[in-house]
Length: 245
Image 1 (cartoon, rainbow, N blue to C red):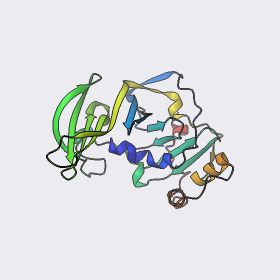
Image 2: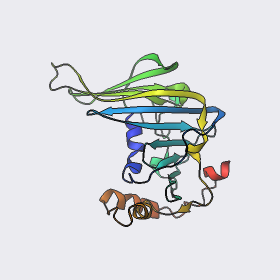
Image 3: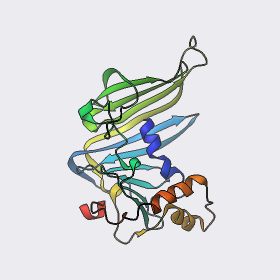
Image 4: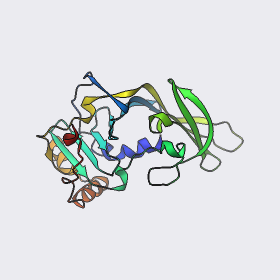
């Protein structure tokens, strides 16, 4: 689930970008779609996140009280802030590719051909889904294990991060991500909602509007804004979710 943590980092720097969509909205059924609610537990704290995929391949990711992030398979990323009716679109940047591996590679390769982290260590089932266990040792004291579901586009349904003080000591759980709910063939419409009246603006502008200019100018936020302004074709992709529906 390291991929999920990386994909959520951009939204995390704009923590005030709160979504207001109705989680109780109707589900849409499509072949190839899925919906998963995932719980992350770390250092005694926990938070929930949602991943979903539409039948056309678009992904959506959101964490409670943060922005929604829409990701296309071609590299387009759209950060959506319902609170101020704004969106920030990035065109064809590396982070826009699917954060998961490809089913064709048995969940061992990313869409660009790069190897996925870990080696195949077994197979089991989680919440009725077949999952492949991928494990990676980072030196003698850190171990990561992911359980990826090939039938859900290699979505990681569970992940653990373990540490130990020395090679002769037992492993201690430091991070756990587990899926609390998963539904194949369906997704919530509200996750992909992109109303036509939402204004296009940089993440920095959105944070400034929400915080009334008190959002700061961290190095991370400046870096994201630089990436945003470096993609002037962001409104001309032609495959944005608002135009698909």
